[in-house]
Image 1 (cartoon, rainbow, N blue to C red):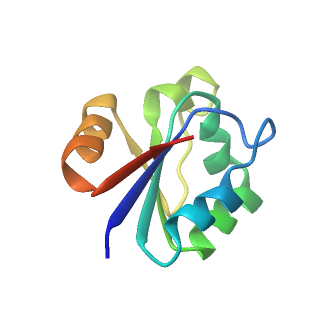
Image 2 (tube, rainbow, N blue to C red):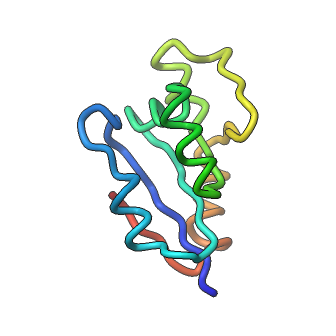
Length: 100
């Protein structure tokens, strides 16, 4: 089964991509990296829990969290990463990358 990584940039309040991600990923192993306003997928409890219930691995860019006032953010199921780690995940760790 291919491993799929999604990169999100937009706030879930602007466009919630979870349904589209599920259509694309199906039962494959999946993760999401949250950039820019997409970090709100991690900070809003209901949205975060929805992703976790669908077995997503969630990564949030720590500089993006800090820029939005969430520098102390810490929740189980969300790993804060830097841009270097994001590039490594995108280039080396997953079979497919889908930007939304």
